[in-house]
Length: 254
Ligand SMILES: *[C@@H]1O[C@H](CO)[C@@H](O)[C@H](O)[C@H]1NC(C)=O
Ligand SMILES: *[C@@H]1O[C@H](CO)[C@@H](O)[C@H](O)[C@H]1NC(C)=O
Image 1 (tube, protein in one colour):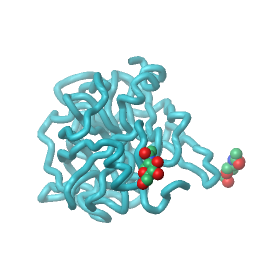
Image 2: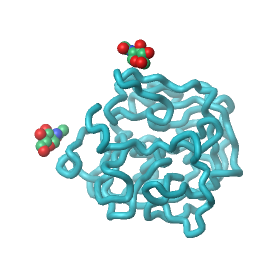
Image 3: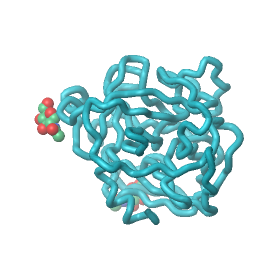
Image 4: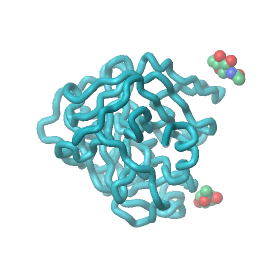
C-alpha cells in the first residue's frame, strides 16, 4: 500500500489499551480540557475499550475516521465492523466514567477510502443524544480551512509514542499548512487532506484517530495519520472536512 510503513494510522489496538490515569496530563504536548470545552467530542469504544475519537454532528450522527470502523485486507477490500461491536461515551472528559454510553447501530464508510485518503465515516446511534452543557453537536466548516491558522486538536490519544493513554481529554494547538508545504515535508499532499504542523513532542497520537481538529468553533479535520511515529516534527494528517461537507450531508440527517 502506498507509503505504508511510513505513514501510520492513529488507532488504538482493541486489546490492552487501558492505561493508568495520567497525573501530569500531557497528550503529546497537550493539556487537560476543561469541562464542556469540547462537548461534541466522543470516545469510540470497540468491545468496550477506547479505540478512537469522534465528533457529534446531530442527535443521531457522529463523525469519525474510516480506519476506526473498518479493516482493510491486503487486496484493498474494506470490511466494516459490525455496528454491535461499537459504542460511544459522550458528555465527559473522563475516558472511564460519566456522561452517557450509546450504542452504534449503523456505520457508513466513505466509498473512496484507501491509502490514508478519504478516511472518514459516519455512525448513527440507537438513542438520540440529549443536548446539554456537556453534549453538543459541532458544525461542519463554513469555509475552506486556511493555511497558517491555529488549529485546535483534542483526544484521548497516547501521551507519547508507545506511551499511556490519558484518563482525561487533552487538547493542543497546531498550525495548518499549504498542501505544497505538506507535500514537501512528507511527500504526500492532496486537497482533501489537512496537514497540521507542530513542534517536536506535540501533536496527535494513537487513540486520537477519528477525533476533531477545530477552527472557528467548527470541525475542520478528522485525525488520520502521522508520518514516522507520533511526537516528531512532521505534520499530522487529517481529513479536510470542508472537502467532504456534501458527502456528510448526503449520508446523515444534517
Ligand atoms: C480480498 O481478500 C479477502 C481476504 O483474503 C477475501 O475474502 C476477498 O474475497 C478478497 N477480495 C477480492 C476482491 O479479491
Ligand atoms: C509532491 O511532490 C512531488 C515532488 O517532490 C511531486 O512529484 C508530486 O507531484 C507532488 N504531489 C502533489 C500532490 O503535489
